[in-house]
Length: 507
Image (cartoon, rainbow, N blue to C red; front, side, top):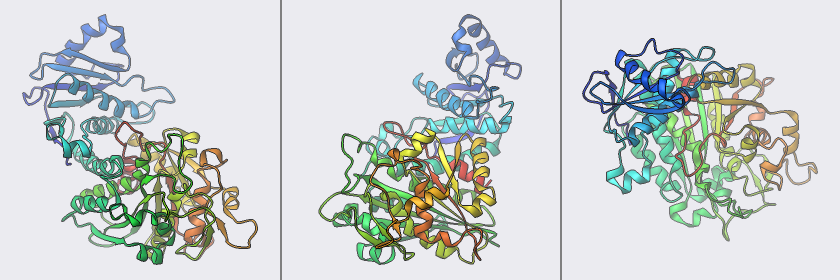
């Protein structure tokens, strides 16, 4: 899916059948005279229209309809730019419910303490664009419902529209992969989708597959894939996407995305109805793929980007891996499996090791893992993405800069810290058979520091623990747990943390 036709528009144009006005109610001084005259009598009579929400009124303009989407308060300590993105989304939704097919989005105002008018306008537009998304299965199965709008107008500047469109096209890729069902986005079909999405794009595509090959090169990922490999339509794929800019490369970025297309829990099977929604366990890889789409469109200079999508289904069956197995990772670290439902770190860790190998000697390397990794992340921080830096990344202020970038595009982060207890937790205390325990036997949500400990595991088993601040070649590494932010059924996925990554890495 590409975006519907989007263009800069004018309130007086007859191309639009609704005007969506996103603004706080602090003042109407800057409103178009006809918008002001349409709203004033309604606001005088209906007190509810002064609060957060949408109000539909007639307006003396060619569009006929005016949807006023009130952001609600914007000046309290805890208000943020989601006031504008939420209002943009709600306003376009309300216009569509009223029968509009060509809405014009208008954004006015700012956040006095945390966002200027340009950032507020961008967030409102990103929210409005998100409201036009149609899920992939619907587009493919029902042509009549394949498009919600014929035209989306923007009564703002062209630069903001261009930026938002490049972000949104990446978010479409992320939502398609992350939100589609376990068969439509089984690993081989993710490969098909990616090949089509990046055809003739300048992004290099490389696929690694086959159980024998994976066992040799990526043994931890292969363990997760073992049961699924016996079903060809579920067999795993490691998908590499590489962007190389023209001219000198000053920074290299490596992103590894968790792409568990369905998580049964494996031998430690998810019971009691909690398996529902586990098709969303691929949202980390989906966000990375979407980010690469935005990279393709922005064509940033001076930065090279390598993305590894670890697409594998955690199936249960006679051939599945089980707890107590001992596996040697790509980096040569012996681990004992403690819980097959901790498959995400298994799927990513060898791919992370491969990225580490590629990073040696490259200019200013920085590595990310992006994953819907733990239920503990949701318990700890609710619906927010979480960033966890290693020493070199923390020294460079990466996590805090990512938080700041996310705040400016309404894609919020919380910071968390990987501490010595997390490193100690993973060590096999007997020292007799293995170095590292893959997991304890309890869910992350029942484990103290259950989202930080996997961040230590990924470093210990990939060999990144050899690239700390004290090493000859330190490598910045940031682990992103997006379990709370990715979005839950029945709603489309959010594509978090794509906007924040774009802002932070591209600008």
